[in-house]
Image (spheres, rainbow, N blue to C red):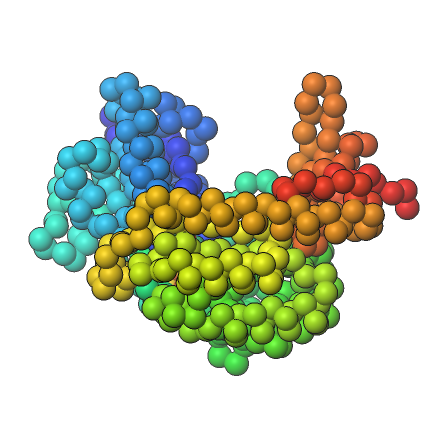
Length: 455
Ligand code: 5AD
Ligand code: SF4
């Protein structure tokens, strides 16, 4: 019996950010073209793929936990486990040698075109893997080289249903923030040709998507020839049928006045920006290699609010970066209080192997201190999220329906406002993808409750 033909059922699980979600859609598309089929349960699969995230230590731990949980669930049933994504390229062969990590092969984010061949060789047995060009590791199935060019330009991702489609417009990062593993795990920055991005948006519109989110590790540093990110937003907004354009994540250092102007005047570009602060202290920002100061960050926020008063601003913050003192932490508190973010993801610093911070500094902020700081910031953020949401009570806004939920006989529809707030309304036979005009009636830190108005 030919093992290559029969062992074709794949289970794919994604960890981490939207870029990984997008990459999983690329992987699906590549493997479906090679006649693999996707199943919903690990136990039905011949090959289990985990598309992993290495950005923070607990993301890493989650993947380790998942591998053991899957082996346990399989209860001895043979299946090949492959690790894709950032952990694969960050930890490379170490992963394969680790006896406590029972996996069969790894493939980094720039190697997905070769996945069908890699899987075929794994299934065929030891010694049959593609030549990775690394003599020392011959015989171990791994493809982890990073590319300066790969953008998967010609591959149309196999998307799950929904109203939003991700489009990666650039990959990799050249910024080398000292805490961040992305430049090592995903390689150098490269942008896709604008024509390809626009063609993908047209294709998506024809497939019924109403919203696209342009993705990049540092999305506003997109440039291709003479086309910069603002030009690209303009080009995508000309695609009929695409009603909303979002993007994530921009870097403050590349946030130009022109970008703010585009957000203010282009009705299709949503009035929401995820604007990572990381720290509110200029010395910490400098050793994080973030290229802006506390004052510059606040200046950009002021400019955004002046140009675009309704803009929703969300952020990422790291507390407990090495050497951060209590006074320096207070600067972050101060910036939060000045900006009043709509929401914030707040993380404890965790050292990532190979990064500048890991090489240069001890992880010297005690765990109890990190906990104290994260609790303080989360509490402040909860108050701000509630305040910003309450300010919307009484406003009439359009929402795009994403989900219909039935609970105990009551049906509700959930959608997003232009500012990306989750809005829940009583369902009246709405369809996913409907635009609805609603009046906001009440608010909590996490969502708005609204009623549809008759038009
Ligand atoms: N420790 C803690 N948080 C981190 N992030 C990235 N690297 C680290 C790290 N080593 C956070 C940053 C980034 C988000 C995606 O993850 O806030 O914006
Ligand atoms: Fe990481 Fe900084 Fe690049 Fe973002 S901009 S991916 S935080 S190195």
